[in-house]
Image (cartoon, rainbow, N blue to C red; front, top):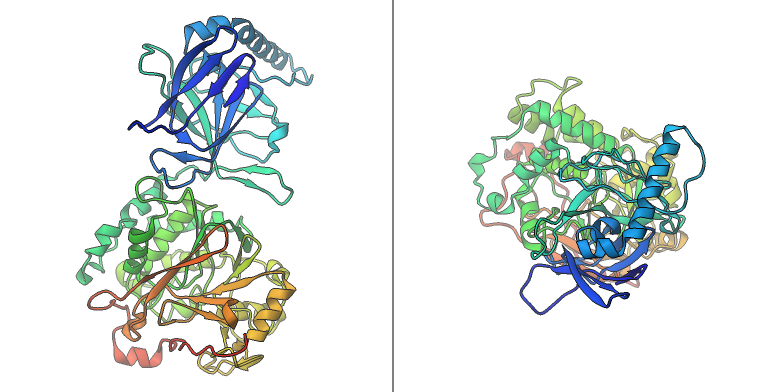
Length: 569
């Protein structure tokens, strides 16, 4: 509840009655009368009034009562009042003053006046159109918001312009008036998603990119867990999109990741996935069982971040579906979906382990020309971040810390686009190899830095294993508590190392049809409790792109880690 002059405004809440929403109630302290206005379907939210606007943040929606909402809603109080004739009459003097200020501002604008506008927000006009206003979003401190308005003096949607923030492409919602109020106008409010604090403690109001029809097409086609659950092997060769559509999607995804840091910051709660390797049906099973990255039924994108630790392509038969869905989700939810680079996000590797062949066979690409899907997706890979940090406590990367990575700042200095140099000659090249290729030692008793003979088949000497003592030292130097990584198949889907200070996550089941391993996804809760969720190999196992035994001899999968972590760490 909040006060506006002599009005007590109560919005949202929860009742025992079976109703979808309850009206905003306004109590006029001058007349001791109650009024029911627009419906508002949230509860357990916070509210405050600034100038002539009522803000509400967080809480829960009736549509998803178990998932917290991370949106900021702005309601024009004057327009709310004007839905009721009695309230409008009682507040006529205040309304007239606001409108007079609006007219004065318009006159000043026409005269080119540079005078500072009064610190009082005018009224905005109501639009019956459903089109969102064309505005942009910047950051602000909520305490310094000073709302100004440009009224187009028509019934079209009005742009709300802020001194420190402009609400660009913000979702324009409509609050429904009380059913008893016939012929009353509908009240609009602006919904701003993802309210976060920046490094200076200021509120950073960001809105997901305006939905591009192309990314929606991919999400609609591929984010279908129940459909993919029934899919048969003989359907795998049919790809639903044209190469030019995949090309355009990849270019959009490049624009998103290229403008984000190489070490991304992630909030809790968060879902963390390990290697997928084109086993798209495994990914769909995770989504079916524990929530999908979408809005609406079975969706939890409003309440949780998704982090993928790399190795999206190769080995499995659905690398195109996997990477196209993840790119589409990244475009649609750039601040919720986080994709790290793995060692298979490297054209030298994925040209030999299945992705190139899949592009050639399913998209009819005859060669690796500059505009090929194989090349444009690998261009996207070259801009992917190398690491993520969950709430300044958990470092997440694909392989490990190796021998050369000492500080997070070492990663932040790496420039993109980044081409992987396997015969590393510089410190930066070696850090990248460590991040993408290194593994923990076989158990907690094996300390220090050791050769990684299984992976270093060319004897370059730049792929290593690191012991639990290296993990502890790194965490202490960087004021961290844990490392999460992928890169190795583990039989139980996840495995602890260094006394629990490092966790390996692997999300593809029955890897290469050789190991019959489980797949895991971990949820990191707000209190840093880690909840594992496991899936097991489907009946009949998974189909892989490489089925020939001779191929396996040339490109064998890395053997799984065997749990044997006895030691002091």
